[in-house]
Length: 122
Image 1 (cartoon, helix red, strand yellow):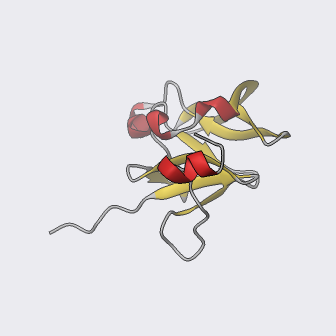
Image 2 (cartoon, one colour):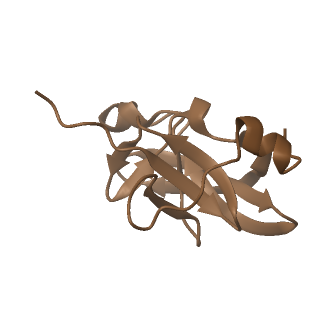
Image 3 (tube, helix red, strand yellow):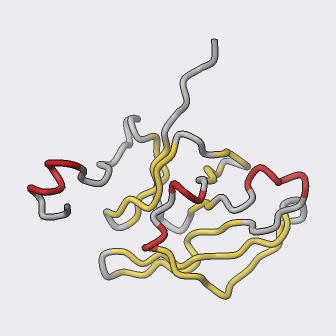
């Protein structure tokens, strides 16, 4: 019997940037599958960096609620074979909180259904 998957949520400036129970943890960072990320808050950045074993990382600037967090998300579009499991997955830093969705540090997720309509978000 396997342990239940943990769901992680990435939040910055009160905005949920990503949520998934299929993150990949590498060096203490949760890498979110691309389909779990709210890309409307991400803008491509020209910044890159190189990891000796993962390869070249590309970055996104996060924009939410009128604020900008430069280069706060990164991903490996073409990682080395040793890091193939994180190809295209997105990780966050620079003040973006990544927490267990149901853990003690959880922050509310996006409003859905009737709640979204009541709040004028649906």
